[in-house]
Every structure is written in C-alpha cells, then in structure tokens.
Image 1 (cartoon, rainbow, N blue to C red):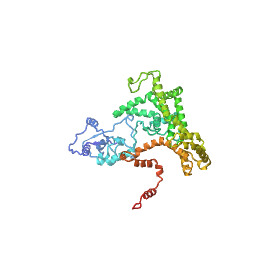
Image 2: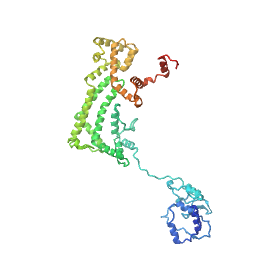
Image 3: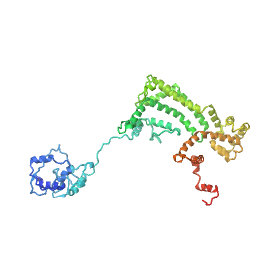
Image 4: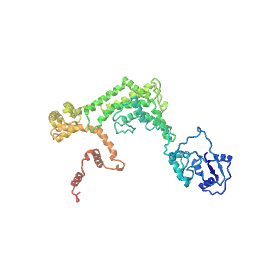
Length: 522
C-alpha cells in the first residue's frame, strides 16, 4: 500500500505569505472536507503559482494537517501523462505538488511538466517566481523540450499574379521560356517618350485581374477614406465594357503605329524602311476600319470580357454611360456609340494625323532621300529623285548648280561603286564620314551639300525631341538663369556625352593652357 501524502497547512500558509512578502502570524484553522472543496474553488488560475505555493512532503508534522488521498480517476476522462525524458517513469502525485527525488529534497526536483504552459507566449517569466523555486521551474521547462506552435496563418494576396501564372501554365494559356512571364508593373506614360503609352496599355490588359483585385481591396478598406471612395469609383469604370473596349482599341492603334514610331526616332534612320512602314501603317488602319476589322475586333473584346466576368452590352440596346449622367449624352444605341463615335472616329483621327505629318510632299521628300541609301552598293540610287530632292532647296542650289548636279551625280556613283572603301558603308552618316576621310567632299561638292541637307532632315524630327527632353536636366530650377551660350555648351556636352567620355583630363588641360598665355603652368 502506497504511503499517503499529506499537506502541512501551516507550512503552506507560511510559504504563501513569504512568496507574497506578507508578514502573517495567524495560524489557520484545521481544514475540513467542506473547506477543502471551497479552497479548490478558490485556486488561482495560474498553475505555476499553485506549484510554487505547494509544500514538500517532509515538513513539520506538528501542525494541523489534513490527509489528501489520491482519488481514483477514470482513464477515459483523465489526460494521459507521458513520462518525462529527464526523469524517467513518473509516480502518481497530486497536481499541486512538485516532483522530487525520493521526496527528500526539493532543490533537485522539477515541477509537474503537465501544469507548465507549452506555448512560450503564455509563459510567465521565470524571474517573477520565487528565487528558491526558479531552478525547479527551469528544469521543468527543460523537461518539456522544444515547442513548435501550430499556427494556421491565412493565405495572403501577395503573389496572386504568380499563382495566376502557374494556373495559366497548367491550362496551357501561356508557355515557358527565357525572358517570358516576367513581373510587370504600371508606369506613368510620358509625352516625350514614344512608345510609353503603348507599354502602359499592354500592362493594363496583362495585369487586369491584379489591378482589379487591388482596387477592390482598397475600396473595402475603411481606414482609407478618400482613397477608398476613389478606388470604388475607378473600380466601377474598370469593370465596365466601355473601358475594355477603349483599352483594346488603343492597343490595336498603338500596336500598328509602334514600329513606325520606333523607326522614326532612331538616330540612323533607314528611310526606305520608314517609308514602307508609313504605307503599311495606313493600310492596316484602313483595313481595321472596314467591317471585317470591326467584327474581328469586337470578337476579341467580347472574349476578354467573358474570360474576366465582364458584362457585355447589347449593341441593339441604348447606351448607358458609366459614372456619368445620361443628360450629357444623346439617346443613341450602343452600336452607334461604340462603332461610330468611338471605333471609326478614333481610327479616322489617327489616319488624319499620319496624313498631316506625311503628306505627299513629305513622302516624296523621304522617297528622294532614300535614293542616297548606300546599302548594297547604292542599290536604291536614283538620279532623277536626287535632282528632284535638290529642287526642294531653291535657296541652297542655284540654277547653274542644278544643271551641273546630274553630271556630278553620275561621276559620284561610278566612283563609290568602284572604290572598295565604300562597300562597307551602311548608312548616310558613314557615307558622309567616308567622303571627308577620302577628301572626296571637295571633289563632289554639290553631292556633299545635298548629302548634308539630307542628314539635317532627321535631326529636325527625333533628335530635336531629344534635345528638348534633355534641356529639363540641364536647365533646371537651380540653374534657370544661365545664358544661351552657356546653355548651348552644356547641351552639347550632355547630348554627346559618349564622345566626350573619350577625352582625357590631360587633353583638356593642354587645350586650356594653349588658349592664352598664363603665369602658372597647369
């Protein structure tokens, strides 16, 4: 028969008063069965505090005591207590008493590990316990071993674009490869950056689900007052058929004219290819304007709306503006609004812009310039076009020079086709450089003058745009009072920085020293 453990109430009272630093000389009354039930109801909720207040089994037997017998418990209702790895098999004991070695000394014992909280977030700091019991508490936590909290974190929306790419790869909508499926972002389009609007429209269509989700979450965020209202307004327009229609229309127009824009802003333009791109762009926009182009375009827009759950409007129904009052619009049907007012009107404006910039005179001028193209041993050479080109500059060529120009062109073309040094020339800039290097610019003076006029024309288009864009960096708010000559010098060094990088500091010092006689030699 196991020895029944007893609790010395006097020792329990003194230890509790000592841990709370309260001086007490009152002796508690003997405990009865009814008072034991009342004590069990008033037990503090912190189990570690109970353990610290529990006495050892070898305290004085002279004080009033009460025997607490271990009650038989039902194994099905009592949790299974595994043996501690540090102490081996454990003996059955009261949950209020510490586990000690042979019941002789509490210094080497550990507290009941089942009463210690497992989660570190719920543990009371060891320094807040009684000094004499801190080592026992530490041994109890060591016996518990490491603890890994089992948290279920909600799935965040970060990486939604990556998950959609994985789903699209599984379905087969997109393919893998080098440089494909890279992360994209929205950038503000710039008026002086050709092609920036086209890139922005492409990214809006590609990132449509992600942008839509961001607007939805911002609109639902109550902490964002003005931003939430603005996001809800944008989301209403973003989910409309009219927005999808306009986005795809801009994508089509920018897509057909992007190659022409890139060709015209190159430093060394291929005039022949630029002229061909002008004709091709006009032709494609005209085909898009026809009925077949409208049907194909509307099919693409409808397919995109069906894929993303956007309601497609009925072309036979009446037009309902999104986010605007009806009184500002005439009562027209959707077909008239989308096909005539939007589709046909925008394409016609783009065609009119191309015709204004590249009219018959400008197109003929560019075609004449193309006759100077040195590629493939001057395969595009045409003497009549070059003479006609000279006639566009009556102030630069006299009547006598115009009469002599055809004969000089014939001598020039025979020379450059025969000379091996001109076979590797690929553009007009290299042709001009080679003429100067071979001293032939003086022999064919009229041809060289005409070539310089041809080289000036591209400078008056894309290069001028670059100069005005660069001026914002040179003449800023801190240097807004510089003179014209100083501004011109700064612009030259900024625009031709690739050339000035090759100039060494010694060359600059030598040039500065030679400009005037100086007392000190640098």
